[in-house]
Image (cartoon, rainbow, N blue to C red):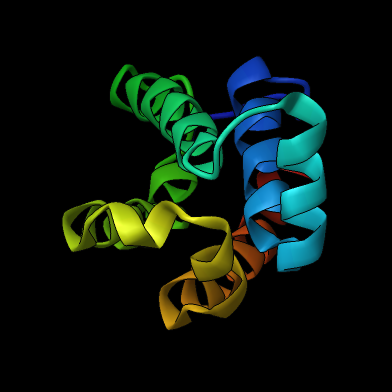
Amino acid sequence: MTECAPQDAGLRQLRASLERLSWPAERQLSHLQSLQVDVDELALEFDDAFRLVCGKVTKGRLPRLAVEATQPIDDILDRMTNAGAQIWRSDALEDSPEWAELRAQSSQALEALKPLVG
């Protein structure tokens, strides 16, 4: 297994993104409003971190667990993107089963990544 420090920037970015994805809808909306960005920013933040970590795993700089734990989230976000623009509205963030599934899976990923990121 590849050794990695908890201070790895990619893992920190991934953890922060997963934390935001796991927050309740009202906290997510508050965060988005404070940044003055749209709902899709949550997905974009995850995508940036996920791609960075995938590259490090491919190069052997991080263990495969980093991708294995988070691939399901990428898959959910792909399905959500294919579902259309309505899923990226504030009311969908609060009410849709897709967002609920994403929150649950993000919480599970955070738990699975604890050995890597604390």
